[in-house]
Length: 444
Image 1 (cartoon, rainbow, N blue to C red):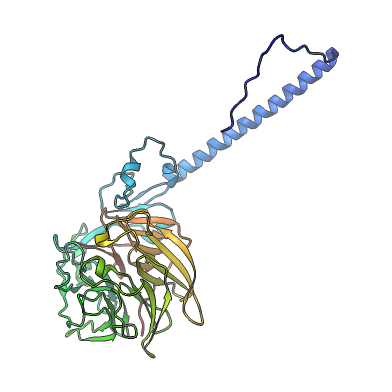
Image 2: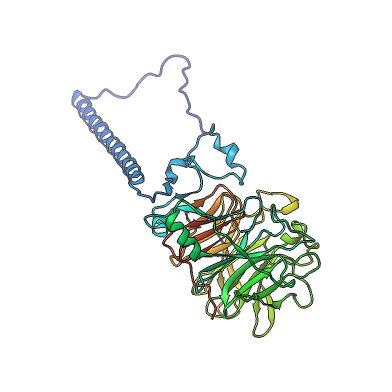
């Protein structure tokens, strides 16, 4: 550290031996000195005024942001400096604790950037549409059947309140969004619509990811259970919900526990993630392959790895042009190994090679400040949504956090419907009546 040096005083004072100047010279120097000081003072005053004006504009712009009734605006400038004695450090150093500086009662919407208002629309709010306390019926694998206005999803596989494991399977259910919309018209603060559970074949074990519709079917990935293999399956969304298994091995080797799946836009080709959560949640044997992202072409049967070097690859998504891919890494969450906050809670972005469709040029897109980014979806504005530790987070196409759907609980997935964004919150389904629309996930 640099220190200011004090002048030393040893012996007699120094004698000024400079020749004496005339009084005119002294007056001229004094005049110049006064002029310089005046200019400096003026400049300083201008600088202070500009700073004050800038602060005033920033403050007024923050207060001028008009948000929907179910939202609050959080100006990042307000929280850039907390000081050494802030109590937030102790709370936020655990990634499971959410960021709620306004102490607003959940559920509500946080706006971090005015651009998020384009997503929300004028009347956005979050309301419950189905609830079953004590049972994590709404975990992942959301697939929206637009024609019938039905949203399909799976229960928690291996986690708390899933009531499944080595000896028991998870379930797939759906909610009728037409019934939701009708009920909300008379009870706008929230409803509890009955869900319907599908009676699926035993070949479908521990559904964790899904997309579609794919040629009229639900396209699902299963994590497998015990010695039953993970798989990619097609499920008819109509009774009797007949099932077709498309893939259940990699050249004779079982996958670890498939987690999520998307189809590359404009093709029939599927991309899926394979972390080790089946083992980490005690319903699958010890993994025998790395955690990777795979490409599967159902027309040729060819399967190959397109990306690796993850801790736990989880959600996957594409931009509508198919040129960019996103993969979430939920490395922090280690199942029975515990939580390691120095591991990734990260969304990675890739270029998709136009010739080979391998994932190239990996870079960090975003890091989640709460929990982990699990399932991932995109809207038509280019924004990226992911289920995190306190709700659903939204980043713009540059990776800037612009808003959150704050529930104060972990949400793994979400899906766009005609009525808005449905958020899967384990024991509860929520609807945010936003105006943004999701990218097309249908494969004809």
